Structures are given as structure tokens and as C-alpha cells.
Length: 300
Image (cartoon, rainbow, N blue to C red; front, side, top):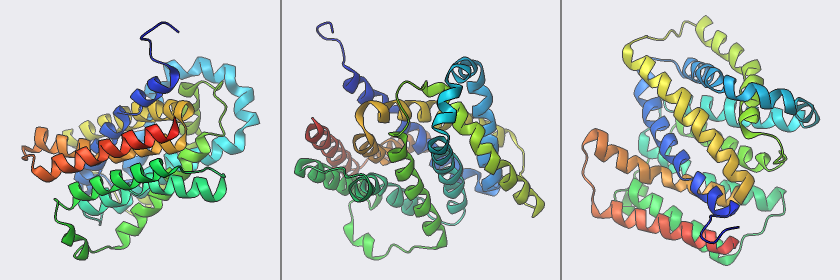
């Protein structure tokens, strides 16, 4: 490798930075659209758009890797169900009833769940410096969510929607760990398209059932713009980059980057909602970045 060139690990870490930005937007859009587009309809059409966006780039790799898809068919089925069907559908359903602060708090448990499940079921070990980094990063998330006022933890109230969102977080933790079972020689663009195709086996009946119960979307320009964003950025781009990142740096390290979601959420609130940055934002962001740095060193 030439001097100054980035190695596979460094590239993998860089690829994990954009997904939290796109997913922060996913939570904002999902919450904003709750009155116009029913949750399962939103999930279904999001993946329809993603499927056709990927198709021109995925059809060649899918033809080549078809024997591998069949060989790893059960692994493919479980990541499609956990990462495409369960996670997104449960998030959109939960956002019908839960507050944004609760959603962000629950989302921050993903790295902890990845480490916990990895230790319990996959024999993964956590070094002391990694544990410290994880705790520090989680404290930074809480600082941002609670506006630096830790006594707010005593007043947080949780609902059935929070339980649904937490189930989504469990699904994503399992998705991240299960991705490691997919061999790196399988093209990630084709793999993403294959996941969506498998997910439609479940998404289509869910969408039809929601419509049968009388839940109809209100199609406006804002609805189409929201679907366009959801279908491209948090679906195609974020999933592809995350999949590649997990393959290169491992599940635990990749999961830590989920803690960047409230960081980007704060930035998006300043840019689009004209909110102000406060001292607790700076403290929380510094803690999150320091925790990430500790976790990365612990893996070295």
C-alpha cells in the first residue's frame, strides 16, 4: 500500500459516518409523516423506491452471486426480515405514539445491545477501553437528549410505542451481528437488492392488510418528497455503506457509530428548524466522539 493511502479498516470507518446522518433524517421524516402516510405503507413504498433505484446496478452482481444466495439462503432471509422488514416497520409504527426524545434514547441502546448479544451468543469479548468508550458515548447521547439536565430522566414516561421502538432496536442489533455471517465475496449492492426482494414477501401482505383495515395515505407533494428521501438516502445509501462498514470493521465497531445519530439530529435541527446550539450539545458531542475514539483504539 502506498504511503498515505487509507487501509481497508480506515475506509470502513469513514463509510460508517454518513449512515447516521441519513438515519437521523429518517426519524425526523417518519415522525413528520405520521399523520399523512400510515406506517406500513410508508415502509412498503420506501423499499419499492429503493428496489428500483438499485436494480440497474444490482442485476449483474445478483446473476453472478445467485448460487451464493441459495447457499446462504437462511442467513439472507434472517437479515432481510430483521433489517428491512422488522426494523423499519416497527420504527414507523412506534413513532405514531412515542416522543422524539424517547425514540432517540431507545435508539442509543443499539450499540449496547450489539455488544451484549455478541458476548452472550457469539463469544465476542469487550476490552476495558471499549467498555469505557461505549459508556462515555452513551453518556454523551443522554446529555444531548436530556438537554444537559439529568433530572429529566426521572420525568421520562414510556408508552406502548416505546416498547415497539425498542423491539426495532433489538432487530437492528441482530441484523448487524448476522451480517457478519455473509461472506465478503458476495457483492454488497446485489446483497442489498436481494434483501429487499426477500423482504417483499412479508411487506406486501403487511401493506395490503393495513389498507384493508382502512388506513389510507394522504398523497401530497410533501408525502412524495418524504418517500423520495426515505427511498434513496436512509435505504439505499445508508444500508450499503453500513453493510460494507460491518464487513470491514466488525459489528461492535460499526454499531458504535449509531451514537452519531443525535449529533447529526442536533445539526439538522439547527439547519432546518433554526434551533440554537447550546453548551449541552457541545458537551454531548465531545463525549460521543471521545467514546468512539476509545472504542476504536480498543479494537486495534
